[in-house]
Image (tube, rainbow, N blue to C red):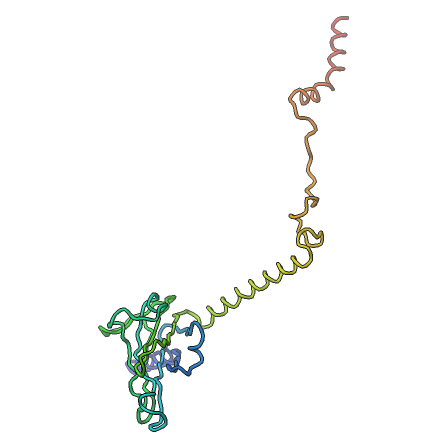
Length: 234
């Protein structure tokens, strides 16, 4: 029984581990993703973010020109100005561009809970921000990354694309209306725009006063009352 329980735990852990994905980001100035306004990566809970530092073959580039960076995990406000406000925000340091066998690599696991005191905890639906400062020169070059923790990868992008398509369709309709005369062209009018739109067939009152209403009720009774009066007089 203990053996079966151990097998079950092993299989469950293996399936859970296999479901986690790794997302690699090559942290260097030649990565075209950093050329856009916002380099964005979507991860799920228990996924990994791998930061791949700059790497060169020794002798390929002068040591003073090899890219080196200090990376920080910051708040949204710091991300916007690309400037950390505390040394405590320092996350990693890419300082070995000529590492012997492979580039330096740092990994972030996006987990809800961590047993380590200095570990990070992440929440579904939140965004997290990384920026860097160069060590190989004193310029203001800024590489930055936004990481969104999502339930389903691609959903946020799909929703954003759908919103853009709807906006384009609205703009196209407006342009078409303007080019063909707008609502002043009868063919462009909606029923609510046309004052002569078909109205529901409803019964309307032909009288507006209480006297007219009483007259309409008692006029048919006059001959009956006259006949009754004459018969009593006789």
